[in-house]
Length: 271
Image (cartoon, rainbow, N blue to C red; front, side, top):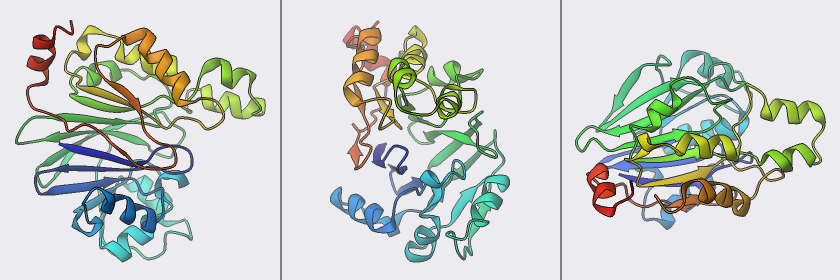
């Protein structure tokens, strides 16, 4: 399974996932020009994607929906409440092919099965995703805009071969930073984002023995940095699996997710 983050952060989010002949985009928070050119750098044509799947209606995840649909011919998948909120935005424009999934349920596009998990993020009905290759059983978690560490999240991570996980802010940088208090409260509250420490705790467990790598995403521009986030995680995890950060302003190609992740870790003596 191939994963490319085309951008990850408050200025825009879009993730490409491919397995065999099935290619999907998750979220459209960047321009069509950026998405097309960044995918082309890795030898992919955006018009070969079978669908665009939306997590929630915040602008850093949906501002490019109309262009992705009309220019590149991508059908849009979203839960009904997210779709109604998205199409109500004037910037969305005309959408002719939209399909609706039920949050908490699973649907399939080509060889990829998409599990949807409802999140407590402060969207109308936000979800995150686990994408599974039905041929190989490889499982990738796209876990951002989580709100807080909710029940069942650790169990899900224990089933993954790789994960792009939100690691939005450093507690000290947020607490002492320039944001007004109401915004600090929103970010660290039940409907905001999870911190470096929260994300590190989620990954710091023996149940995560399948993980081949973890990518830290949706880092805050003002309340975090790749250096701080990586230091927090490496202090907790050591070298049990590779950890890196998704670029806030550009693309990041992730290692190909291989088969037999559990056997890989046992052979490497990771646990």
